[in-house]
Length: 449
Ligand SMILES: Cc1cc2nc3c(=O)[nH]c(=O)nc-3n(C[C@H](O)[C@H](O)[C@H](O)COP(=O)(O)OP(=O)(O)OC[C@H]3O[C@@H](n4cnc5c(N)ncnc54)[C@H](O)[C@@H]3O)c2cc1C
Image (cartoon, rainbow, N blue to C red; front, side, top):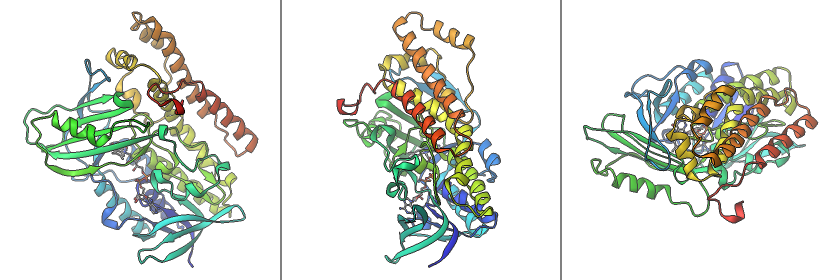
């Protein structure tokens, strides 16, 4: 049995970055992934804010990992009659996820982390209410006991370790259906000369797109909230492909999907000896499902806080709490705001989103949530509402929805700085009460309302 400072389950965006940073700080780190090395990363590209690499100390991608092509597309509301044009999405660029995964793993190993491929985390090892490592199934099928002062669950939405943990800590074992997107993505050969990219928000309670900025490739995607009775994303993508006659089916990449958490982050990401990071902590944008930048942010903070806790000989919740407090303010406040907005929008007739996006009352960039959310001035809000004067019934609802979203942001900015169980419970109660005021989703079956 080996003993490490830190054991990390999941060599994705968050796990590799945390492993690299901790190893660079001199910590002994083991990183495991259930996949083999060549299977790491999604078989497509992701749209990532270019500013994030500098912020988290990860060298920026270069071609061919950084894909060419300006990101120009039309954004449509669900009715698809009007659109706003988005040219170059505020510094976001596409990055090849297979190449990024390989590079991140290389950095982690070069920094000194030990990597074990084809090794699946099964459950945390808990002693005296404290996580002291994990049990995993190794490549040869044997069960191994990996001991560590701190164990990180970075296994993505499945939360392989989280789902065995006690709910008392402030995170859930499972993510409910209404808090996840199901997705499907196919990238086909595209020889057409005239190419138009379009993204539709709100349709089927989610997003669908045809992106054709990459030379020679057309990228089809459908993702929506996992309400019972929803269509299959694979069928929606087949429909999009059929409706694009200048692209003949010729699959180059993707051809599968993966679930994405689309809720605000869990109330807390830490327990004694245990840390959640990335999708396993629900650190994704609740409206568009992007999570590369936010997972990198979270992993950067988590690694710094873990190192400092270990320096002081500590592995307890109180010592790990600064990770919660910093991430909540830096990122989760804007994601909580977007989560409230998303819940509000799915509780309303689709016509409202048609009006909001169609008239520019909400702009596509309002959905990106790239950092601390900007609060809008009262004048700005009044001007927006004037654009809805012919729809008075929606004005009050909108004021309500927007004000709940703003309050969510404010509550997250007031997350307790220090670990104090009573203060934390008070904060959680406030959050739960606020989100409970949002009406249930219009399309959710009765038993989910
Ligand atoms: C279709 C789709 C499109 C997306 N588009 C974008 C986008 O454009 N921009 C963006 O920013 N984000 C996008 N995302 C989201 C982004 O991919 C995730 O937010 C990000 O990968 C989260 O990083 P992570 O480290 O938490 O998880 P992952 O990167 O998923 O890594 C988790 C790792 O854990 C491993 N694992 C799982 N279970 C176990 C286990 N039991 N034991 C050991 N290892 C395990 C997995 O093999 C995997 O390597 C998209 C996601 C999907 C599904």
